[in-house]
Length: 416
Image (cartoon, rainbow, N blue to C red; front, top):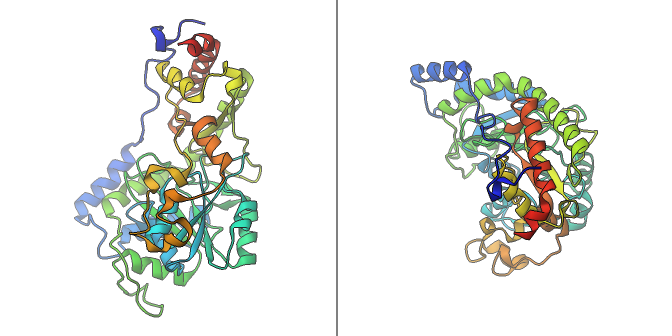
């Protein structure tokens, strides 16, 4: 093939791929309605608009209840507190995820316990979850990562036998299903993000799906500064809460996003299958993680692939991605890295003293063996943003052509 763009050749792709976030007249309609209503904030709480959205979102995911919060990180904190997690309690988390999955535990003065992930899907390894349980363990947070679902059959079984709270981290997984059940509906809580890069976005925002009525009321109180008001005053005592309300300007955008959720979910699912078939029939050494047959509706957030350097002349993944970006295709390698040593997890025991018994001076003192997380984060995983699935088949063909071009020039790439 022709000379690599990294070394002065012509890129495979010069025009941009599908823009993100996407919007149309529906966002404009809801925003104008909210603007003219003069009800822009989140107080009084809950607003009529947020109640309507939560009903729609819960129904789509088969969840009992839903509440909104200011982002998809604090939703995890709210879930932990509503579940009764206390100082010193242990919460099991995967070691390959965004920092918020573990940071929420620290901020509740509890202790995150890191376990490695499965090779097949990069989600939390249920065998290691069970091995990590101690008398202090109170909860587990499985993450539905990329386009994969954690093994909820195993996780729920383990949780039932050990009396653990299950908080599904669904930040990537809007619209996904496992055995016909919506993500976020199977555990005690589901935590969703509406941050700018997510499948549904209002720029910022988050949602919590909740199974139990008392947990729901406590979550609402926590989000609204600890207030107890009609609709969420049926529990004993008081909650020491935060102002984590989400304003109606954001909810207006989410209403429009909800209008198209089913349509875009099914479209991305189809495009994800097409990309997988096209890639696997054309390229050796870069394979999409195999979908679990128990995933009955694929949410198709990031398409996660495994990179085999032996099929690319021994070139490291990061060098391959550098050349690919020069061809006009921007994938990520270190989208996530091993969480116990990530710079965002530099939690110190002098600030969060419950960490000291397990981690000494802090999280970065953790001792453990996490081979799958380390391999994925630094050497193997390749992430393709879902906006690549929001365009045309020609977009996918260009992506594969760029990969093939780099692979055909690995000798030059390795030597320079």
